[in-house]
Image (cartoon, rainbow, N blue to C red; front, side, top):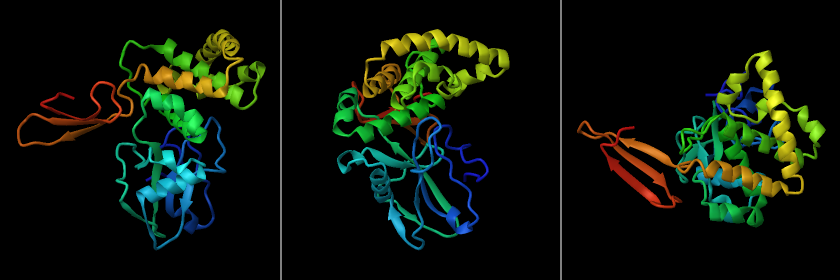
Length: 281
């Protein structure tokens, strides 16, 4: 359970914090956390349900959160409720009680990342849904939840994505190049990369490395739209992380070998359910 004094410790960077309150009742109920941008306000997050004594289906809570985000019902089916660890999802029909005794906390996620063909159309069919998918992928990127196909992908690629994200942030929030230079690059790069720039000299080096790349990317995307910049960012992840969004389950058997189930309905080669016996994980 998330501690009130450390609201981001479980969910990672990119979630709006729940504000402490003098009323103990306000800390109970159902909380559905949502992804937000850098330094996002908590004015729209999370979804808080405090109809004590009632129970809600997980699917019902998803639609309530989608309505809060102004996402249309036609694409809200992409959403699911994840437990704070992000390792498990609630079945759509799971009944979740709203209790005065303790809070129930979940994260709203796009459960299975759509294929590129759908992602390309999503900004035009539902811009709010595309923005939420982008923020989720951005959050997974900066919190090191993405496994890349090519393990040789190094710091240069990660920092490059951070630069693209900074340009996107500037375009979306009307911040010019001078304003972008004053932002902290560490808000846009993964934790693994951030840990390499802990000390003062290293932070200065990071800013110096970012500066020429930022200027170059700013000019490259200056005439581009915010949506196209986001699409570039998303594709820079999906092109190198072919199993991003795949769920893996291990099934215990009587023999010594393990059975592994992989679920990825949008896989280009083997969509659906794949079962492997004796696979070493």
